[in-house]
Length: 177
Image (cartoon, rainbow, N blue to C red; front, side, top):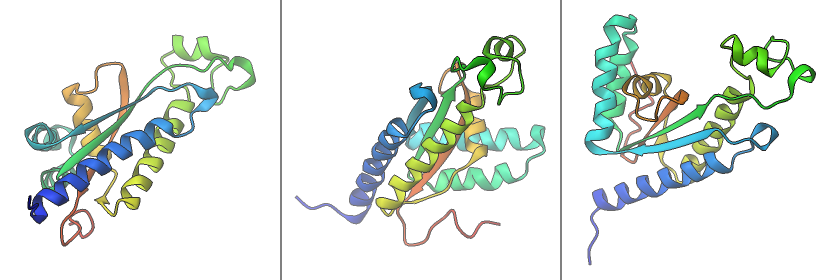
């Protein structure tokens, strides 16, 4: 059997995407509580994110969403990493959320600080896995916002970041205008 470069490169991208999801899952979590969710998009499902970025650019007044839509289209896959929100039960001993305790934070619509921290650590682990696989990538808030707008990860996932992946002769996420 013969594998041409396009097939081999796509296989490397998908293998890396799976490894990134594993890295996000096994990344350290505050108090051992895991609220991380991951997803991999390719083809038309990935391109829906690009279309949503284009749609959101004008109402949000974020013209960089148009540039990022091009990055998503140029990617061979898109890894989504999100987090569900929930308190860790550290209560009065913590107060990093600036509320009296976890119940007060939840009642007033606050966010436990450990959720975005865990998300950041999971993203760092995931992009390290992409680097280990020699797959070009970039973390995009914008494409994560588009995924949230489309409800792709469910309404319980309240923070999402996206990481487009590419194996090409030139990194499409580097020289951006």
